[in-house]
Image: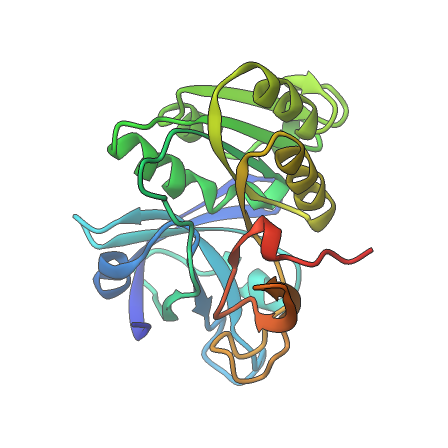
Length: 263
């Protein structure tokens, strides 16, 4: 059940150029949140910007009532967020959406993310570690200056593989290259992925070729965040029938076989 609460900002730092990590005291949300869910954030105290911003949960600490958001400045709303400081109140709606599902009898898992898509994967890795199933993580970035909180991922992954497009850190190339190698050489039973659509499409194809279950977290423009405006509708397939579903409600995490990708 989603709550609308006034959280209290207790930390804000720049994690990479133009990308910020904000910690918020919000016990009502922290108590219910699952990896892969998001909050809808009011970015200011006035009507401008009018719409909230959907931001995935990057950390969930129910024991101390904290959540964390990793976000990139992209416009007026996120610029206002970056200007907020510890002690200020922040209006949150959440947790929203359906997160990652850990199937019964879970085997070895691989978690892969690209760019800002790595954000919701940290609490997933922590959840897997907590049940004694630490996963392999593959994180892809453009270059060394855009690496995000790598030490935090390394602390909860069994193995961490980094890639950068320009080769300035980790392996040069896309994150899908080590994914193909890993799936061919290890006994993985499931892949969890988040990132830009071309990457998710490629991850889905690779997982399918190996006959491995895959869950993908989609990114979409959202207005209301609660399923009323249909602005985030995407094409999906269920029991052989195509239909539109709402990323904010039925997603953002889907079985990759249910997603009909744009050509």
